Amino acid sequence: MHKTTMNWWQEEVGYQIYPRSFKDSNHDGIGDLNGVREKLPYLKQLGIGFIWLNPINASPNVDNGYDISDYRKILSEFGTMADFEALLAEAHAQNIKVIMDLVINHSSDQHEWFKQALSAPDNPYREYFIFEDAVDGHAPNDWPSIFGGSAWELDEKSGQYYFHTFAKEQPDLNWESEKLRRDILAMVAWWLEKGVDGFRIDAISHIKKAPFTLMWDAADHKRPYKNFQNVPGIEEHLQELQAVFQKHDALSVGEASGVSAQQAPAWVGPSGYFNMIFSFDHIHLWKRELGEKFNIPAFKHALATWQEALDEGRGWNALYLENHDVLRSISAFGDTRTEEARVISGKALALMYFLLQGTPFIYQGQEIGMTNFPFTAIDQIDAVDSRAHYFALLAEGKTEAEAIRQVGSTTRDNARTPMQWDDTTYAGFSTHKPWLAVNPNYPTVNVQRAMRESNSLFHFFQQLIVLRKNNEALLTGRFTELLKADPQVFAYTRTNAAQHFLIVVNLDRTPTTLALELASDAQLILSNYSTYETATLQAYEARLYQIN
Ligand code: GLC
Ligand code: CA
Image 1: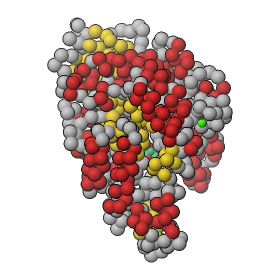
Image 2: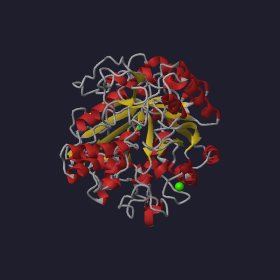
Image 3: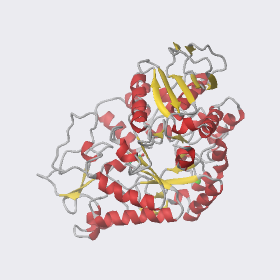
C-alpha cells in the first residue's frame, strides 16, 4: 500500500477521554466538556490525531453513561449541546477529529422508549425491547448477565421478563424490530451530520441473540456469553450500520468481544463492517495483582495472532493496552515497585504495542504512566459491576478485607480515577473533591512533571507518534514475529520494500539474553535505557532498530 492511498485514521493515533475524570472546568468534582476543550492544546502537543469520548449523552449514570436516556441530548453534568459543538469546532480547528461512543445494544431503563414499553404490553414501543413470557413462573431461560445475576428482569405489571446483557437498568434494544433499527440509524446519521467524525461502537457483538430456548452452556469457558455474543445473523444488522457510516465517511471502531482473529477479516477487512475492532484476547491476561504471574507467552501469542490475521491488507487492528474497563497497563503488565521501574516498564509496553500494525489508542493518563489505585474500602469504588461483585463475595462468606483485595485489584475504577495534571490538591483535576478519589501518587505522577522531564513517558509517546508517522514501514509494513518460543522477549519486524525495522522488548523483570544475531548495520533508533549491552536485555528493556 502506498502512503497516498492510506486513510487518515491509519496514520493517526487515537486518544481516549473518559470525560468524567479528565478535567473539571466548573469545579463540581466532575469532569466536563469544557474541561476537554481546555486541554486540546495539550493533546495537540502529544501528537494525537483524534479523540474518542466515552458516552456524553443524557444518562442516569447507573453505568457511567453506558445507560443512555436520550440519544440526542448531552448529559447536563458534562455541559450543553453548545459546549459540545464548540468542542467539535475547536478540535477540528486544531486538526483533531472527534469520535463518540455509540451505545446501541441497550438503552437506559429511564429512556422514554422503555418507559412507554413498560406502560402496557400493547404499547408501540414494546417491540423496541426484548420481552418474553415467563416459563413455569421463572425467567425464560438461565442465561447470565455479564454484570452478574440473571439476564432477565421481571416486569411485574405484565408478568413478562425483559432481557439485559448488562445491568437491569440497561435493557437491551430489540434489533429484530425494524422500527427500532430505523430510529437508531436516523440518530447515528443525525450526529454525523452535526460533524462528528465517527464512533466507537459499544458492545456491538451483543446485538443479536440466539433462540431463547437454548440453555446456557456453562462448560464453555472460552465464550460463556456465546448465546448473545457474535451470534450468526448479526451480519445483517452490522451491514445496515456500515451503510450509514460509509455514506458519511465516518470512522468506525467496534467493541467486539467474542470475535476471534480468524473471524476478524469479515469485520474489518476491505469490505468489513467497521474500520477496526477492539479485541480482547491479550487484555484478558491481566491478573498479576491477584498474585498470578502475567502469562507472557500467551500475551505474545494473542497479539501476534491478531497481527497475522489482519496483515497484508486483510484488515486493520485497533491497538490498545488500556481503556476505562481494564487495569492500568503498568500495574497489570509492568513493574510499579519503584519510580524508575514504573517509567522503564511503561516505555517498554508503549514501544511494544505502538509499533504493531494498526492504529494505536492511548487512554488518558497512560501517557504519563498512571497506575492502579490502592483501594482499601468499598466506599472508594463506584463501578456498578465491581460493587455487585464485592457484595457477592461477602455473601459467599469472604471477609471485607478479602473481598476488597480481590475487587480492588480488578475493578475498572483503577482506570477511572481523575487525570493527574499537576501536584496541587486533587491533582489539578478540580478544586472540588472529585467523584472518585485521586491516586495518591499524583505528586510524582502528573502531566506537569512529565512535560518538564525530557526523559519522561510523555516524551517517549511523543517520539513514538512522530516515528510512526514518518516511517511507512511502521504503518503498513509486514509484521513478522521472531523468537516465538522465547518465554519473555517479544520480538518482531516491520518491513516494506524500502525499510526494515526490528522491535525487541523484554516483558519481564528479570534480565535475559537477546537470542538474535543483529545485522552489522543495525541502527538503534529508540530505547528505554541509556546504557546497554547488545546481547543482554535488562528488566523491561525495549529497543527499536532500523536495518537497511
Ligand atoms: C462496554 C463498555 C463498558 C460498559 C458496557 C456496557 O463494555 O466499555 O464500560 O459497561 O459496554 O455498556
Ligand atoms: Ca464539572
